[in-house]
Image 1 (tube, rainbow, N blue to C red):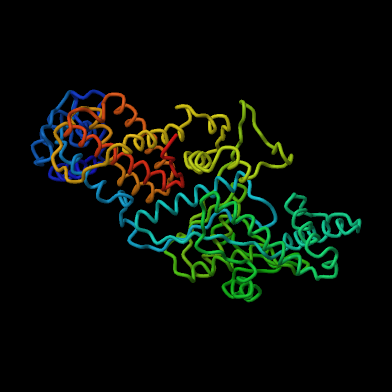
Image 2: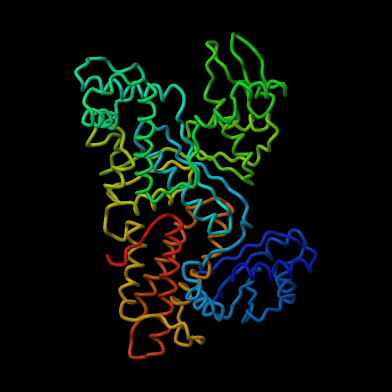
Length: 534
């Protein structure tokens, strides 16, 4: 209804030969109507008239059968009282559409690529990956729900020096188990998972792998680590549509030919024995090396090829979600896109800020079990997937956040995910006794403010989804579902659902069913599965 009133006001104001941003708010006091606007006050300085006179002019231009009445209040507010029919109509809409309630087509099937996590397959996923994963997957769910054609992608860094070091680390651990006392490589990986891979090799065929070439350990390491990563992400409720290999991209696009292509466009030069990318002439403030003095390529070259491939696939928009440490990388990446003749505005790079894990008021930096950084799997085991997904979706990506372990595990109303899920479970317990009746078309027993407020919030859901999709802000969904749960708890405190009045009971059963469905749909968009019993 809010959007409909804004359209009505916009039309009325245009008749006064004016255009201005319109704000509608919900008055704190019921006697001031369902919605209020200060647009007449904002127009006063433009039209050089009294706000009260302007308000009178605006009201005189409005005719809408959904509006019961309009009141003008000093110094120029316009208060709207609206019919509640739209709220009751929406109850049956929710009952009919079920899991599709809130779905729209504002995306018009535009092709969107969202690449997120993409951690090197050299170690286990950590807290930063957990936050990026929750954001990327939630955004993909929201945009898909809003009518976009979304591809979730993971870029596998399976080439380069880090993979050599991974292979050497596995080989060394394996040699050590076989009784060969070789030291770990200078830039080796010391995680427990490396020891497990080596031990599994030994358990399978003792020392028979000692003469295998280094490529054997590379392929094994990539396979084992990637399986580990994907298993953790699957438990975290993330399933990718596409896995792209850096190695295969390098085979598909000759990287040296790519450098020549940049050179032909005038964007490379030689200096100090290296080949440089002249991105200071594009979108960066300085140039960067493509080929080092020793002839090896920097990782920028592979990323240029990867994004060339993305553009070739014909996406309308590509979203890369990277760690905050990649801040200086954005300009050179977008410069490379432009240098190859593609539109850099189609590529959006989002940087996720740091996460601090807090327990008992103190920052937790290391795992109690391993003494290393806390992993995604440990977080899931500690607080559960629902809490992890909810808390990471709760904050805007560009803000630093503290993840409070005590709060996330608590079974109290102070814990927002518990509070929301409890609303859902409470409704489920009632609906085990009674089922909704979709044949009801006229609602007469629902006539109190707490009912209207919760139904108004349910009615807002499609608009919230659209806004979250357009602005790419999953936390709007988290904020919304918390507010809906709060209004339901208040409604529940003020109303008995099942009573001797059969008609009133039927109406209230329908009301709580549409609240339940809306909570479920909202939580599904952020990867949270609410329990039916708590």
